[in-house]
Length: 170
Image 1 (cartoon, helix red, strand yellow):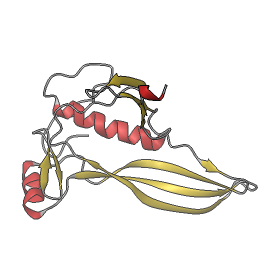
Image 2 (tube, rainbow, N blue to C red):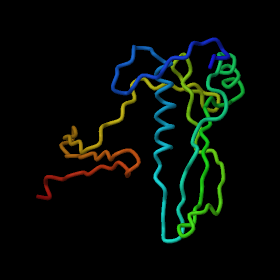
Image 3 (cartoon, rainbow, N blue to C red):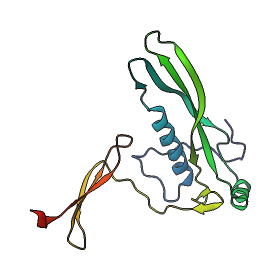
Image 4 (cartoon, rainbow, N blue to C red):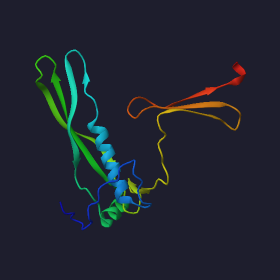
């Protein structure tokens, strides 16, 4: 599909394959693809009577924003994002028939501009090197001598938390 803004489409780079420094288009594609994949992999919630499931997850609205759109968002206090929508279905477990369905906005995924910024409520933000830790337990000794363990869980499987250990207690 040709781009209405004349920008040639480029496939996003897989997370395992290194991107070129400054490859904003590839990074933007990865942000959108990872957010979409995460929403599509939400597991149904079940009890004895009903199952709540998410279907038909996708984006609506513009895929790209121009410099003029960016300027307008900054000057008017707007936000640049892509709207992720999906259909929630409540299904009766006995008959396997849907009781209710509703299309809803799941998220407004931030749009990475060509200059590497995000526009939120008229303010441009940038993240220099924001990395996520791999799942696991990370320990360190702080400058004051305290021992600390940071537990980073798998995405979507719990909250990260910290343990502080006091050697004087032992």
